[in-house]
Image (cartoon, rainbow, N blue to C red; front, side, top):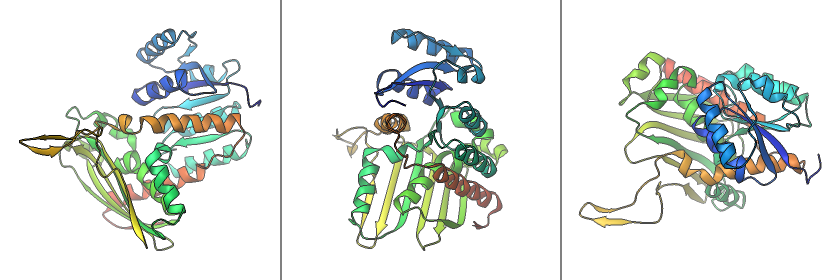
Length: 345
């Protein structure tokens, strides 16, 4: 592919995150042109039609995924669909000769992860990337570079959390039956971060526990709204994960990396901006409401990195093996949560 050529992209799935990706691809990603969108839901296609018109683009809308893959000149697809659909949709796209960006997690099933990797190996000319967006956040990038430079000595322990603001409507409860549970849905980001920041060690044992502090409806799905997990690695390194759906103050993503000569912390105060409020209640700051706002720039960088890797024929640092390992650990954490026992990997 010519390096000057604009990448023609189609997006599949136009829910809350799919719309963010679509908006970025329409107007903010150099070298990419969003030429088609696909969803089985009429309301999502109507949203796409309106957005295309706002951007003065001709909409090519499909209710059928196969029809989108057959769109003339399409180079790549962005999959922002239910996790249960990811493996087969990735395989279909590869077999159709398309590059693939897919939101996390790769799958809820380890064998499906392996099927995707095997198919990708048959198409080495095609790029496949799973959306672990935190790797593309400026603060996490800075922490990673400092670790590589030896700023905290040898890193040996990570604490990382994904804590969502309490939603009285229980939005996520509606998807609990197919989410894979709190660790695969939320902590998979922290799992990937821990491996990345600790030098990609192999997990050997995990233990997880949790509680339903507010959302008792999760009992029917054998899930919890607050969970804690420990993951031990083969080189003696260790990680602790905390996931929550019940934060009163806002979305709270934080990671702490401890090394032999120091410590790095990313996001210890989930502040909305640099404004501080001082009144009769004390001194405080406002917090961001969701991961959209916290990682807005990272989502753009992530997409740009994927597009640039295709156009410039560069290797992607984030691999399918990384995504498979995050799923493997996430599945083991759920198994531990349900059994109450440590799980050996």
